[in-house]
Image 1 (cartoon, one colour):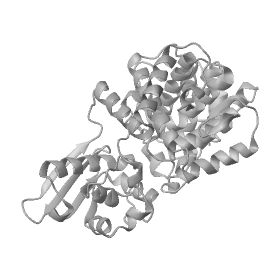
Image 2 (tube, one colour; image 1 turned 30 degrees about the vertical axis):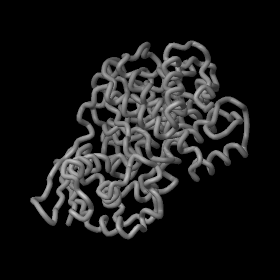
Image 3 (cartoon, one colour; image 1 turned 120 degrees about the horizontal axis):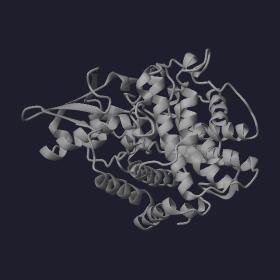
Image 4 (cartoon, one colour; image 1 turned 45 degrees about the vertical axis):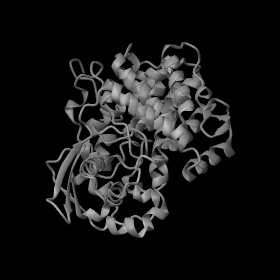
Length: 442
């Protein structure tokens, strides 16, 4: 009807199809996220979940359209997105956006890169599409709201699939109408449950999101039609997935990029534990604490995280990544939580760590920001130590870049990390067809 505001589906389709340029500040963060994505994906290529999904896709073979991390042969774009998305989230070391609690890069970047290779798009176009798709995933995630997340849906898999679709549709040159059909189709494909956290199912969510995005756009390119209002229609995605339909989700769309606020991980575990770990490190180092000094550790966080990363007695390295108690014990024992080798099944059974873990209690405060944590350490001698940390506190770009590059160097080696960073810089200005191979050669 005349005068009716565009639907959420149409608005996001228009954003993907009609945005002509993105601010350099947002592109700079996407370049950092691409470096981070490549580092964690290349480091995670031999994880069991990566091998299983890669072997399945390789056994099916198909058109040689896109590169695959850990495989010499090229695969169809959809399969490449599935494998690369799963692989990039296998270590759970990729970036997180707390506006909706999702891993946008792991879901969107694999779809954008695979479709760029399939269509012959430039590196510049691939980078911009990845940014547009990631921003869309964040905006849609905010629109879906925390009720969606609390109901048990993993935003990486749901809003991530929708962002991946929009990135793919942009690279395929869709207009708003065709993009709306692709997005509507993606709403009936997007899926992923938080019940899978701590299992191989969680990284698989990122692969599913990326593959669903490629599939929805590919079908729409062939003339496939769906509900062009699939997000907001009766019995649509919002109605059936506990969405809040937050009106402020679109504020500043196209002018301000929420993706610039993405948080990169500097500990190899669930991002929900990071504020507590930083607070504990600050206290440990300032007071030169040893495990023997500490009688009790109380961690206070927002109650939402009790269902995310509060496994009280983990028995595997993967479960340890989702345990406030075990990660706190590791930090206080001086273990490097930035190192992948720290999170092992053996560590979970180490008597000294288990004893320290059992001194940790986790408390909640609904007034606590989701990105913050407070810690209180009781001591045998001296007054208790109290401190807090908020990972959302602004970090200057130069400091963020330095930390991401150090992380990449630790995962890949300094020479390879610098080679990839230089290639990403060239990609931004390149109009040559993008090829993932430029990043896969040591």
